[in-house]
Image (cartoon, rainbow, N blue to C red):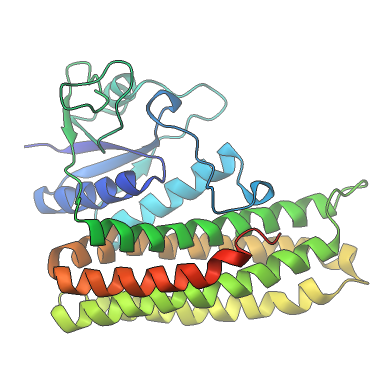
Length: 309
């Protein structure tokens, strides 16, 4: 039986679903996981069309976020894990990295057709003698739509947190590219995004509680984390508002934003590793149709203001 899984992550919807499956599989067989960023050859651009380009995180920032989320997903399921980061060097091909880490199985999401594809139109992964598991993806239209909207909302919040962190860092320089008003705009946008995302999350949680008690403890913990996150964001308000003393508060503001970002990413990872797999398992097509309709209505209401930064 497999003992050590290599799971590449890139933040795409299919990758997030494959991560959840890999974590559950590792838990069921007592295996451990090494997470790594997906090599660029196997992924496309991470730019999100629904988020202003200036709010997009840099590759290094995005890699750190993805690994934090993956680690939180594994930890929530009690699966031991480690992180393989490329550092200053170019990332190794998956097969070479799997050998270097001592892995005996590579778990990947199916990738769109490209040069070097399999007969079913998906990109093949050379395991270099190590077994490769291509995770099956739930293709039910309502599931894809509902979870797609939910994950897009997460990406928007995360991207604006990255932008706020960059603004806080740059503001401490001698020639700042960001003014305090930019942080005000980012904070205002986050205040618009978070209630909509919270409403979708609460609707999903409520449906899941109706169908099973298997994840009640995790939902309770995520509820407590939500309250803590609200408190953390509230505590940042006075720092962002201190325009006249911005230089003096910039360090504390950056530290507070970094703590908020870390906490938010870990919360997202727990949802991706526990809640979404459970929702796919326990919710009916009727549930998903209702969620997709509700999420879509909220998304339509939001659309005119999507690129206000």
